[in-house]
Amino acid sequence: MSTNKSKSKPFTAGRLAKPTSQLLQDYVDGPALKGELRLLPHVVQVDRAHLIMLAAQGLVTDEQAGSIIEALEDLDKDGEEQFSAKPGYGTINLQIEEYLSQRLGHNIAGRLPIGRSRIDHGATVRRVSDRANLLNVQNALLSMQEALLRASEQHANTPIISFTHMQQAQPATFGHYLLAFHTRLVDCFQQLSQLYDRVNRCPLGAVGLSGTELPIDRAITTSLLGFPAIQDNSLTGRDAYYQIEFAFSLGMIMTILNDLCTDLHIHSATEFGYVDLDDSHCSTSSIFPQKKNPVALEAVKLAAAESHGWVAAALAIFRNEGTADQYYRSLPFLPTACNSTANMLRLTAEIVDGLIVKRERCEQQLAKAWVTTSRLGNALLLRHELDFRTAHSLVGRMVKICLARGMTPREVTVEVFQEAAGEMGVSGVKISQEELITALDYRRFLQECNSAGGVGAQEFLRLLERAKEQNDENMSWADEKERLLATARFGMDKEARRLRENAIKTDMQSRL
Image (cartoon, rainbow, N blue to C red; front, top):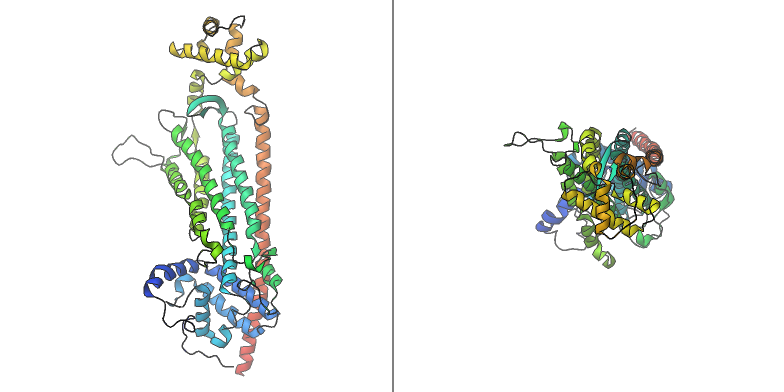
């Protein structure tokens, strides 16, 4: 059999009279190829599936498929560092064709692109890569959620002050506060799970835009690559609009991490002193020896700041999708965005695991804080027949008087209450000193707030158990997806090995 190992020409030589501009190679094609080379394992995976299908359909011989698979697997073992790309020879799939041509000859290497185009090949590699990145982020999400559950359970009864407008609002518990972040991240996990189902469709075999008259079988490649379904309309095979959703989902996760780390950053300041970070997540000043700088929190916040441009960039990149501009088919920053998000999730989980909550400090501040006034307002509404707005105004005036006189909730008296009532034109409210102090007791507030989702112990335990169930469900989901991919990979490895062994046997027989 002729191997035809003559000197190759760039694939553009047939249509174009000039080679690719050096500047275009330096500034566009070269950097793009470096990004593609990082996906080399996924490229080889897609190529192997395609060759197995071609052999099954009789479009290549088993020996041809086996020879190419062996060369591809050698390339994958060597890795991107050992791969010598040729300037001007195009994208990764064309570079691999040239590599195969030099090793096996054009007659064999030229079989690889049968029944596919660079468009659907690249789209398949992209989806295989995005699918893996999705699972990586989701596993990092699960790690973060586990850390939140551990800390929530540990601080189920640790009282804190909650804030609105950066002003003290109501008593809460640190455990209930952390469960709120768990709930938000569960939503993020579910959002990514729905996205995973849209990503997890195989475009290989769309063959450009309109399909092909060749007898390919897309079901074979779809199954070998672990996709549950094909991307059905061949014209949508190249689409990557889902990456806009992906960018948004990542940005949302980073926004939630930013909120948590901003709170911890503020509450670790000396003026608050509610929490302290483990020393391993801090640094010191080069000039101020007293300082303990929470640099881990700042790192997460910096990464989150960068994430806020991802959606805008995604929308801008895809603005020309409708004109069929081929460069506008994917987000080059998406793998970095996925890594950044997964890394910050894991770092924040470690921060939460090492966090020190200063319970005594929190209790001291709660004893002085006017954060149970809504409970007093409810007592006036239920037991003294005041309407809500009148009760609200009366309690507000009482707080104003107490703050002016430096009085804490424990020091307020019926006389001060009646003074406030007089100023607001309210009469006939006969409240006792015991009822007044009890209504303003933050401990009673925390014990009795058992409305659905509230901070009371009964509701907290229900929320905690539901959160644990959600984590178990999400872990099972991720485990099942990874099991399906591993099963598909095992099947492809088995068939690739059979073809490779046939090629070796045929080669040995031909030498006899």
